[in-house]
Length: 551
Image (cartoon, rainbow, N blue to C red; front, top):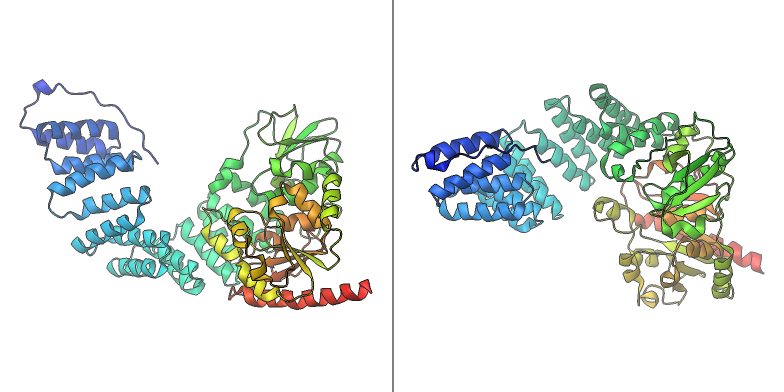
């Protein structure tokens, strides 16, 4: 975060002794320590006017630029300083920070290495180097650097936290838990350590203890959005929805969620204001699957006497046009009609006091547009085998590499498990990386010629819904297409990662949200192969029943 700066009164250099470089430098350092970076920069530059080879002033100018979010300028100053100075660990450390901000990670590692050679006990450099190795996917080097850090300083809380994070990425949750516990022993008030402990306990199947850890963090930090957000997920995951929805409202203050919050002049509807004769705007937030899951509440709101407006991303427009209880569907970004109240879709479960025993919405509550159904009937109607729609990848989110790795399944692995079954498979997959995986390889994965890639003809979710309407079954990882198939009442099988989303609860093969959904869960080994083997065995049974019924 950039600190506030104050412009200093510029001195009259004619009144300053030309030889008194130290005066300027000390003035600059004092201002720098006070966070008055622009004023400090001015005095550092005056030092260089008097002594153009003053490498310490160059170094400090590099640090000011770094703190002012100008890493390219910072790197230039620090490199000039290093060219004039003896080997300097501090300069190399700041050089590495600038390179990190420029995403030049290999060069950053090199600078951290050089700093550590000069100063072997440079703990912050060891910790930062470990973090950069993690960015590069080198968990072995990450762990080695962080273990070196704690061997140098056994009280370094960030080292234990980062070490735990690296071990979590390796699915070594027991080791991660030990390091998080060391961190909280050193810093009992650390909300971060408490939440990380909760995450490790959750992955070890110790959910009640995980909840207790988040509650401990909140006892010390009642306004911790991090602790509220994680506690919400744990409570919802364990079926304690009434408490969970309350904590879920803290999402606006945590991470990426803030960008979904809307600033309307009209008040938010919280369930207490009468809706008879009023207009209520329900609006999309977070993912497409979330909107598909929670748009079911529109009919409940309409039943309270409101005229319902529904704002959604453009890709959902044709799908949502016929939803029960909605008067008008608007594409997000377009002008909104007048309304009296608004409510984000994912706040509606709290408003309606939804528990795991009473999720609302008649099933099915979504259907394909009729014109698109007719089009796909012509495309698929002559194919008389058992039809399975497939989604094996939830896409690639740049900011969620661990989610990508956990959720997505290589198509080759899916094909190995399902190849040879007497049925037709249809790719409902969208997203560049997954589409590239298919293109031109259909016969390679399914030599029998019973795998069909429909991606090029899927323009929006109306098309996806129309295809689903002609499927006998949809099999998908946890993504928006899964929600759509289940919301349409289609038999739907979820290939569910071990670190399950809260909405699928724990240790269940069914979902209270979707009566036609069946869940195939990974175990703690996080291996997709046994999951796909179970799916293949059940598909063979489905194909047999289908064949018998067709006779």
